[in-house]
Length: 250
Ligand code: PEP
Image 1 (cartoon, rainbow, N blue to C red):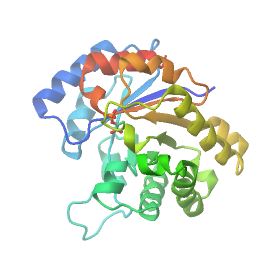
Image 2 (image 1 turned 180 degrees about the vertical axis):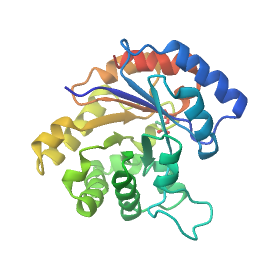
Image 3 (image 1 turned 30 degrees about the vertical axis):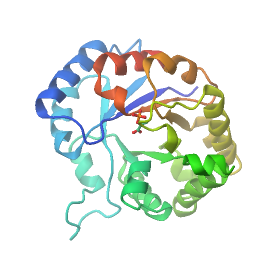
């Protein structure tokens, strides 16, 4: 049975003071027995704070991006090894904001995935289509290409300790959520695509849904058979909302 995961993506939000209040509220609101697995992916400068606040709690933490190489003259970049120094377990790769705003190709995302995985981090690989692609009926082709880039670089066996997040671009931060049926359809497609390579792996793979998840729609989404939790943007910045979403994934 797949344990559900709810991961918060704080994006470029927060301050030492705001984070302290949020993390304190999460730590006091979370109870291990009641909850699914729960994690927060914070901006790089706050990894140390996340580590100090969350160590010993059931909440895990991680980052929102990683460089494919371990070290070198790459101004502004952060390696997987550095993330491990701060106790990260997770790292998001290929978020649509990075693909769109910073031109990250499927190949670069695959390299980031490979570096994270090889270093022992659990990559959360984001895939998803734009509204135009959905309307043109190419959702499955787009997602296949995003998955295949990773599979052809690392091979399906390297997906054993990884998470996939299906995030329709048109639902991210827009307040428009995919219906549970729309999301389930794509999640099942992803699982079947993985099963063509390795049925056991496909069955174990946690596939999260992301895109305007809120406490009000989480129960229905997480109730679908192939939705194994969520990647949460806006609602992860409000402790009560994030905790309610974590409870919905119980
Ligand atoms: C995200 O950024 O991954 C996301 C899903 O954002 P939101 O929940 O705000 O749509």
